[in-house]
Length: 81
Image 1 (cartoon, rainbow, N blue to C red):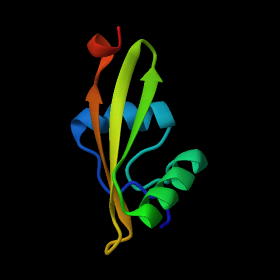
Image 2: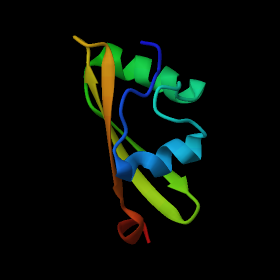
Image 3: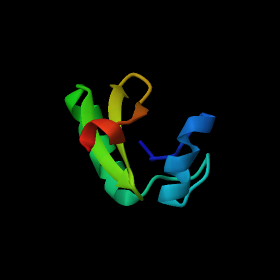
C-alpha cells in the first residue's frame, strides 16, 4: 500500500485540495497509517473531518485483494449542528 490516490471524482476534489494533493500523489502520512490499519482489519471504518465550516463523514472500505481502500464521503454538517 503506497497511499497513492488512484481516482477521485469531482465531488472528492475538496478533500484533495484540503490535503494539498492531486490524483496520482500520496495521501498525508497520518491517513496512510489509518488506511494500513483499515486494510489489516478488513472492516469498514468511519471518520469525521471538519474542513472550514463543513463536517464530512468518510467511510473507508478495504479491498485487501487489490491492497487498496475506497473512501466515500458525505456532508453531514446539518446533522452535526
